[in-house]
Amino acid sequence: DAGVIQSPRHEVTEMGQEVTLRCKPISGHNSLFWYRQTMMRGLELLIYFNNNVPIDDSGMPEDRFSAKMPNASFSTLKIQPSEPRDSAVYFCASSLALAGDSETQYFGPGTRLLVL
Amino acid sequence: GDSVTQMEGPVTLSEEAFLTINCTYTATGYPSLFWYVQYPGEGLQLLLKATKADDKGSNKGFEATYRKETTSFHLEKGSVQVSDSAVYFCALITNSGYSTLTFGKGTMLLVSP
Image 1 (cartoon, each protein chain N blue to C red):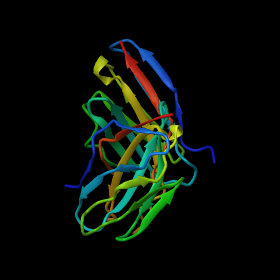
Image 2: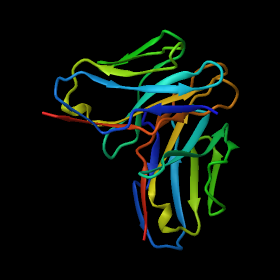
Image 3: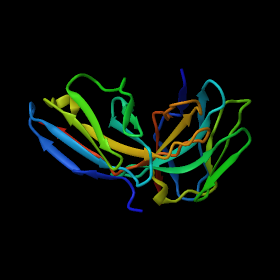
Image 4: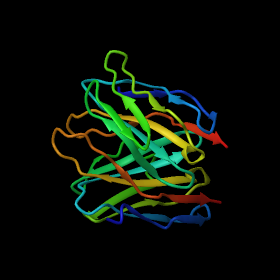
């Protein structure tokens, strides 16, 4: 399996621009997670989906952030408008959630976002 | 709520030294416990896991034992290599409904030749 695929790997943009991050989970997985990693805050869960449905978006910082999962093999995280404080590494992860089983999450390589 | 506490880094060791990275947790119920590793410029990778008390997870020479009585899951390796230099994250998940991983803040390990 190719693992979790994220694109782009690096993104440099100017403040106020729209940014779209993309993720393709591992085939057959039914849960998808978006994380943000910064030196100050460490690893933060932004949102997660189960069977394409958003289950918990309480980690999304504010209305400028939105995430969608139109089908089982694709998800996007959008920031509009972007701000310098959004600069971070954004990870997507997927897992196969089975009732009563521990869930191993598999992470993508991340997108390094720099907002100038 | 659930939480994971790891020792602060960086941990600096010479090659072939013994490694311990402490991890303790607070959780409702009976969580599963994980160690993830993040190499420079990469995403997190599962290193090992344990799903019930007294289980020992092991991989690539690393070991951790799920200690319910001390709510701990310390990571150990008998002889570290330069290639083990990375950030190590302890994490837990409670197996109840839609639960998610709770991560510690990570511990950086630096191994010198």
